[in-house]
Each structure stands twice: as C-alpha cells, then as structure tokens.
Image (cartoon, rainbow, N blue to C red; front, side, top):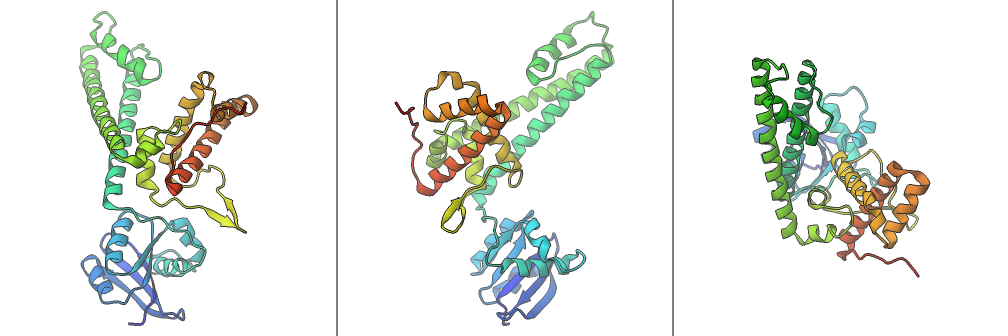
Length: 324
C-alpha cells in the first residue's frame, strides 16, 4: 500500500484511520478494532503517523515507533482548524492526517514508561490532596451547623477538630460526633498517604542527577524537578529570524507544572530579605514596582527559562553576586 501519512483517531475499541500518499491522495480510510491496529501498521512501510494527545496516545506512539514509523502526538487545539466539517471519528482522523504533515506544526514529546510512571505518582498525590481538602471543607461545614467554627486551612483543622470531638460540653450530638470522627480518621489517613508519596518523590529526586541540578534553582524543589523531567523531556525553543523567542508564561500548557513553579516562587519571595544575589535583587525590585502576584509569575517564568537552559546545555545553576 503506497501510503506515506496517516492520521489515527484514538479510541478505546474502534480506531478510525485516514491515510494519504506522497501526492496527498487518500489511499486508506477505514476503521480497525483494537486487536488489529498494530497488525495493520506492521505490514506498512515506514509512515508519518499523527494522533491527538489523549489517554493512551503515548503508549500507541511508542508501539508504532517500535515498528519503524515516525509517530507524532498533536495537541487537540492544533488539529481543530483542519477539520473540514462536523466532528466525528472519520473527520477527526482526516484532520489529524492533514495537521501532522504541516511543516510548522508543534508536537507533544513522546514520554517513556518511566516518565509516565512518575507522572502517575504526581497525579495520585494531587488527587489525594484534593480529597483531603474536600474532607476538611465538609467537616468545617458540618460543624458550622452546630455553631462550631473552624478557621480555614488544614493546620487549623488539624488542631481544632480533635479538640471539638473530645469536648463533651459543646453540645455536639453523639451521632454527629461519631460521623465527624470517621471523616477525621480519613483525613489523618490521607495525611499519611500524602507524606509517603512526598518522601518517595524526594528520594527519587535525590537519585536523579538532572533533578539535583534543577533543585539548585531557588524555588525548585523535588516535586517541581521530578514533574518537569517527566513532563518535558525534550526542551526546545521556537525562534524566528535567528532570534530566540521564549515567550512569557501563559495559561496554555501544563497547569500542574505552572502551579508548582508559581508556588515555588512564592516561597522564594517570602525570603527575599535574607538574600543578596542578583536574582533576588531583581525579584525584590519587581515586587516593589509591580506587586507580589506579578512578581511571583514573572519569577516563575524566569525559572522556566533557567530550567530550559540547564537541561539544554547540561550546565549547573550558579548564584550570581550583585555587581559591585
């Protein structure tokens, strides 16, 4: 079969395939069930294969690469402009086939199994943190029904909830006391689980030379370093006219990484008074001129650029003293 470019609309069981030859003529347009997909591609000559970033995309990209194909993953927002009519599996596959051949298309780096395993750890931990927050908010709301108020924040909850449950004179009915104690026990278990994951991430970062290099940057801890290495294995820049354009930090891309970067810079800004290096001086001046929030985002963007440079050039971060 004379096919050079293929778009796959990924699914759980049935996959839509759209393939063209070197002249752009459609030569294959079919649907395959899951067991037949790899067997179909095994009989084809090496092709450029595109697929949207979704659950399972990295797995299929790795498997197709093993068969000798050039598999590439595209963010869905870059595929949408090439869809010619209503959204369905066949039209999506055609749009992906068109998009993957564009010379200026941006692709998602294919992650290894180990990188995805690290991201599993981060996602599970993040889910547990959300669950703990929900449980704390629920117990605060339920206690408020009995006139018992707990300030916001898990540290307040950690101290006040046991006191309230043990106070026999606060008018809390026994049924409510028992039910709220059950919630509190779940919160305590979540604390232990999250701590165990934190320790695993810290141990992982200590074993990884790249992670240790990144953690030398102010505001970059084990969580941020390991998440970045698992999410962005191929640091790149986009340039025009020979001039690098790294851009500003935006709401595009990985929300989790952006959150970690900004939380890290908030910790840095809180301790600026004790620092005298050039980066701290720049951040301190920025806080005075633009305010705390803008400075935190700007420092996060600068850290992202520093991370890119360290990974690209395999260099070490060095604190620069203020010029005398």
